[in-house]
Length: 226
Image 1: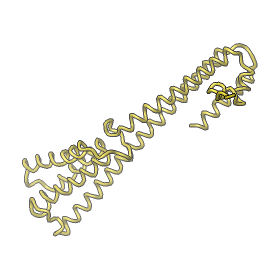
Image 2 (image 1 turned 60 degrees about the vertical axis):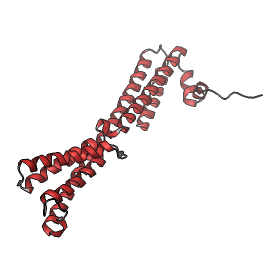
Image 3 (image 1 turned 90 degrees about the vertical axis):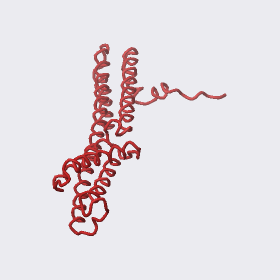
């Protein structure tokens, strides 16, 4: 004869902890405890999945993920946020000092990294270097910054500063995403604790030591998981 595989309830009932706890609980208390645990587990999985999906869409929600996609809007936005302010300044004040332009470019790189992740930061840095060479260093509208040691030093210093800023922004965004995941886990643990408290409050009179031991095992398991 073919034997039917045990379902999830039978498998759960077969564990030694479940058998031990069920033997010491009233049937209605056991059922309420199992329903509360199932609800808490489902809420935990749902919260984690929702938050992971929210974070995975990356810059659509201004949240950093290490696998940011190279998309056209990221490239266009990052190049534009560097080029447009610089072109406006050059039209209004063609002889503006380079010392005033560099902080503006660093701010543009910061904003591009924050909105478009590392793809935007890299695009903004490359665009800024090209525009510096074309419009501010050496002869205008020619790529000749390499002919002067001073211009090379300026570009290298800008690359160092802009790269450090972009890396810092990415790190902060990555930590922020991890903090959101940790907060979701804490909320899920709090939900599980509330479920345990409800089950304990609804129990009939019985062996208090047995209930305390069961709850101690549940809390210990939760702490180990977290």
